[in-house]
Length: 285
Picture 1 (cartoon, rainbow, N blue to C red):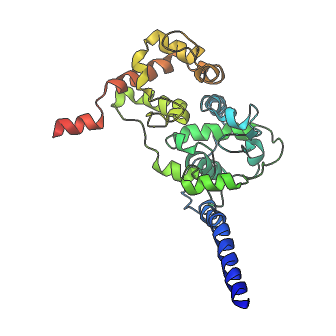
Picture 2 (cartoon, rainbow, N blue to C red; picture 1 turned 180 degrees about the vertical axis):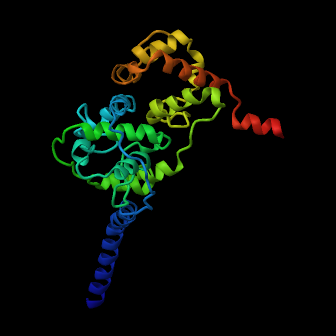
Picture 3 (cartoon, rainbow, N blue to C red; picture 1 turned 135 degrees about the vertical axis):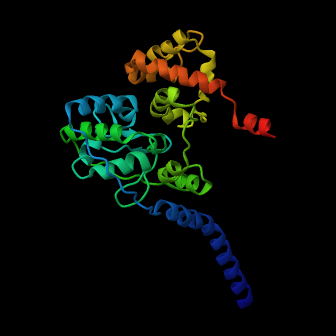
């Protein structure tokens, strides 16, 4: 009888260990990722508070899509995708963040404590110029403080599983690996920069597309007139309103001037005609 009780206890303990092992492993593995600390790069960017800087900063905030996540007044809002969390209240952070803290958050996905942000699309802003970051910071600092700092994200079991699987990654890691769009020479540099700044959030700064957005080689289907309609009205190449681009054109891209759209179209058209790396490698062989 005692022997059966011992073996029963061993079996029960083993079953308990097997039942607890996966969630314990997931918690520990995800916590290691969440708690990781990164090297904080030095930043010499200072907010541009000149009149020209404020005007430019207000425009860049809209063009880069900051208001889409942080709210029209930049005081933060609740997001649902890819998991529930609050986008930061930038107007409250302006009272505690130094310029270099903001710069690292925007372009590197890093908090002042060297931990990574989550969901913030810093990988799309890695290549934003210092002068543009300075203008954005000047505009943020010109806004009166409002509200409170939003709480950090809370990770449920589902999010922790996603972290362990690699489906949900720290922004700092993504920012380190994001590639720029292909360079096609000085003639196209202006259009290339606008493409990375305005289109990088959805299409990637390499413009090669994502699960939600296509490779921007699709611009080969667009005439110049149709491309203007795409950015100003959200219409596709065949004159139909696109589900994703319709709201984006209304919120962001319609503010682009002709002198910005023309070089953007020229660059994307040239990019679509440029040989791929595989074609170049094949020609070398």
